[in-house]
Length: 295
Image (cartoon, rainbow, N blue to C red; front, side, top):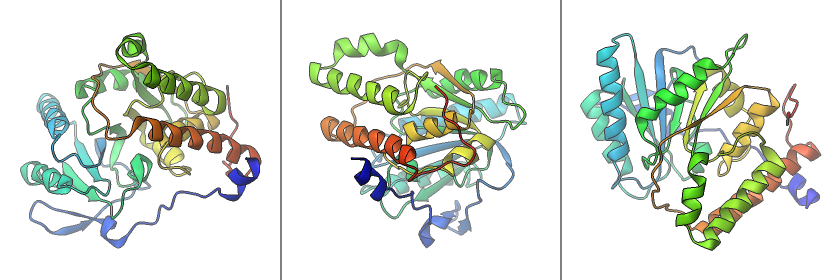
């Protein structure tokens, strides 16, 4: 297993297709995306990975209502929403472009990936924000809970490098979810949690909640080191712990949304990724400069 893990080790291909380097303005003009390496130019970037979300636009409605209201109350607050169409087969891009036409491309931009690459491949590399929020398109987490994760982020001592991460968490709802789920799905969930704890990340109860807030500096440090795309949440937090980036975990409101993934195969694939993440770092196939893993 160690040999297979080492030989098959690779790094996420961050090279973009030519079409992925541009976004369309409200009038249909092509404009080039900025880089995460550039200095920030807005207060908040909201990155929304979306795959076949044509029929579920409620999250965008909720997010835009909140952000517009916040800007009215605090005119100095600036934001952008980047919808990542992760190789969808439906009209996700067309639906997202309606928001660009309504609010303008300075507030809503759409990045359409040529092929499906998973949430990791839909990263934050085009963000302009001082803070960067990753939020799932299914709307399972109430968008207004950004205030909770933002407060927790601000309470972290991020000096001197201004690195911090705040994660939304559903751990407080685990007993209720176990009662509602089948025995088989509960077994898969608990098995996955054990693998996360045993191989990769300790001290974080819920690594998979799609509601994570980063300082720009923390996003640059962690996303530039990613190797996997599917179980990227776990590796992201593993990398953060390697670099001793402080991480807060905050309870958020959450609603069960039917997943597009087949539970058994998705959990099996992520479980395999977890084992390989640890083994590849252990064998030296993947390396982090000046990184020391903490418990």
